[in-house]
Length: 374
Image (cartoon, rainbow, N blue to C red; front, side):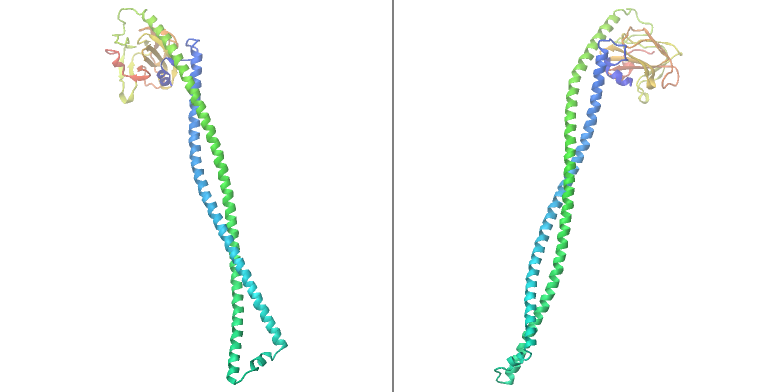
């Protein structure tokens, strides 16, 4: 855009028209600095995304660590329960085997001595009451033995079921722990990878910052040298300007005059308009508003054929919609010199000159610099 070119002051221009010693070196540095800025901004944007991902992964790792810890505790608790149940089951099975052996021995004894119990009951019995008491006691002992066997059998069944449940819980806890541990390892790997990317981007940003910092002084020095050269050209050209008043009207305190006689069709600032439009017959000569050096001369988007002249002190004038351009970049022109012809190129509704005054690249109302009317 011409705006960017003009805003850059005397650093602007088209290829091949500025002094050969300064133009290529300055252009190369400006382009290099622009490329570094683009790369730097891209690295900063990428690093911002990486930092966000790092924070997200760190949160996931912390959550997964808590899950792994909980699963380890659950697995340990399940192991302890299984061990306890196994020990209890072993003890009950031992008791059950002892009870079964006692019952088997008793059954064998009864089979071999079917009347032994009766003899024992009758032996030494002095009365019927004593016999009855012995029978009741024997029945009670038999009943307690049967109850004990049933209880042992019931406990064995329950303990086996409990052991099976606990073993299943243990297996589930081990499986959950293995899954959580694998996920944790994946997250740690991703976190490490993102950290490496972040470190690489940080290094690139540091290098680009250093390169950009080293380019700025070189660019500033070349621009200062070019400005000094242009100032010398302007001073030399000003010495050639006739002392008599120019034919285009009064000259303001900044050494500027109107570039063309005509009718103002649009003032500065109307609907954001950045200049003053002056209409005249198609092809009317356009004069330089002041002595200076041409810093832009070519096609510029909506402006069509567009010319900008630097007058020193940060002041420049620009002329749009020309039908023809008669000057080239780097050329020294004097006030009132014909620099082009009025036309309607670019975004234009009819023949006119779009006239701008800029201070350090920023548009200003031309009427603040030039008295009277075009």
